[in-house]
Length: 393
Image 1: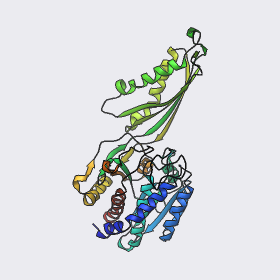
Image 2: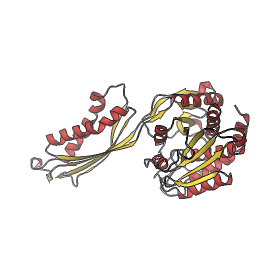
Image 3: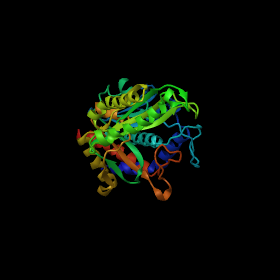
Image 4: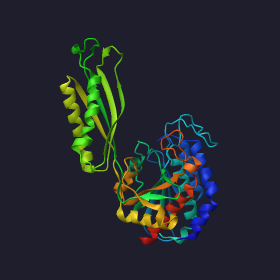
């Protein structure tokens, strides 16, 4: 491996931490990353890269050309924060009230900017091109899809895509990955149930939408326990329920919202019909009606076997074989899936947890933070992965 990468990353560690904390202090929600994208575009411009902005609405792309023509590899970092009020008492605490980087995207941006800086300084040492892609709207807004629609995979055509995610569930110094299905789809449904209002003391004159919703919620779980093989992971989760106006009124309307998660594309395509069948049966039996709105969101994240092997080999050299772990699929989702549907690549996790230092809170938590030593591992992984791909292809 190239020793200069590790040495230069270590020399830039303090700068990388400050970049990360700067992003953390001024988080922005998905598709509203104006300050963030301007900051990134300025930094990429200072490296004399070819910079394009407003790709996929708010995305930024920096193109680095090597010494000679060759393949093109895309490295991606997501930019958006979450609508969470931060509870951490740290100097770099969010200054944008009600918005917080609670998923590590601030670290992803700092890592990729550092990798861009190092590889730009050594562009004479490799052939091919590297696209540094800073993507908006990962948190449920499908920013990756918008960037693809705006041509981020073209001109030049991208041959491979890679990205990482900092994860506090894994200890600092670990790299976690798997070939094939890594993350689940993220589909959503809304069920509107209509009954008939009546006095709570005379329920026979009405049709109770709350009772229907309770039966629907319970029966939906039979999809997991009785209709799908226990060997196929499936989540059917109802996250919100709204209905009723008073304790002594039979509710006429209830609205349920939920999500479906699976790695199996065939099962995924059948879930709308399965849920519709259950809701129809329950509401018909209890004298009600319904409307189901089912939205197919992010597809499953699927890693190419060869590209995952490349990342694994890099990981062994960066952190050691004992700290590169192959994991089972997880049920969280990510719109990196859209990139991986179009181009072969690998999405992998870098450990950022440290219970001794207090970095053990889950993602999307108001007290989430991560061990900034993970930035060094992440930057080294991304830099070596890009160079290894270009060298091997």
